[in-house]
Image (cartoon, rainbow, N blue to C red):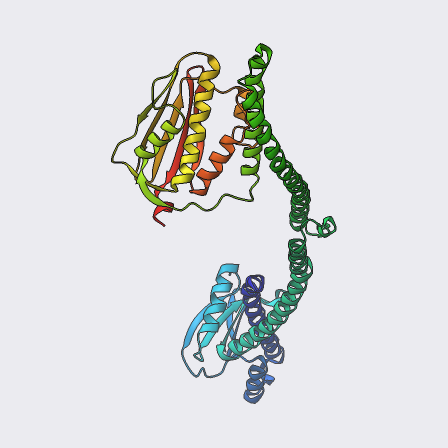
Length: 444
């Protein structure tokens, strides 16, 4: 439609210019007939010539002489004069729209060049009404043609959009629905066939994502089956190790020197194996239960954890608790106990592995948005291998004999509260972990 408008503006101006030129040509023919017949043209014939030319007067200038060749009474004064000899495109467009917008029956004077060099200029007076009617008729035909072109264009665009965009998108949606019903079925991965480059790129990206997801689901299914088998084995093995531990405790008091030396090692080995089974069974649960939030004193919880870990009295490892006594937090008491217990136990074991004395510092504070808890130690720091997979099960063990479940469980419990557990620092001076617990989720 915009193109049609841009075409209509100069075309209506050209139509008006051609209309006026044709009137000038008709008036020139009538004037030449008058000049050729000289005194033989009667008033009735002159009137007929003017009627055929559709003008009131004809003035012809030849050889520098301006001559009124044909004339008749003008019903109203002349409203305007238009000179076609030097009119530019903008003037023609302006005059055309003025004529279209002016409903009055005006008399106008038109000046132009005669055809075939029949004079210097020709001037006529005419009624502007018929010209305006012809311009309106021309505009109506242009409008009908434009509407027809627009309908055809719209239909072609509709068909093109349907075939190039809508149908491929529907196909993608149907593939997504089919894939969602059975994502593990590799046959339901979309096969890119779109002809539009952007849609084909989207289909290829979707196919790649589906293939990766299908592979991940298959791997997770195999890991789930493996985990179920490991859990069953760990359960039975834990019972066997418990029985073995009872017998090992009995032989620890033997008078045989060799047995007395070997018994502690045997007991430690069985204890580690039993602990591994317990941790595997605990982590093998489908998910941790949702936290049961309640308000409690963080200082009291910290003291309870330190006492349970054997850090309340004097020893090679001391625990410094710097938690404000009046600080209350909203969390699951048992789950946060497990988190702090895992962090403090790891810190104590790291310090004891060095054979030197050390300390564990537990501090806390709050901001308008969250509570934070810091657990730091003066141990040797975490090795680079442990930092890469710190919160991954069976990957982030930092000490010899460790299985890497403690931090994974602690991170999962903190995430259940809507918070996060992060390693703030780890160097030769020790390590420090930060727990962030948001207040907004606690209030909700």
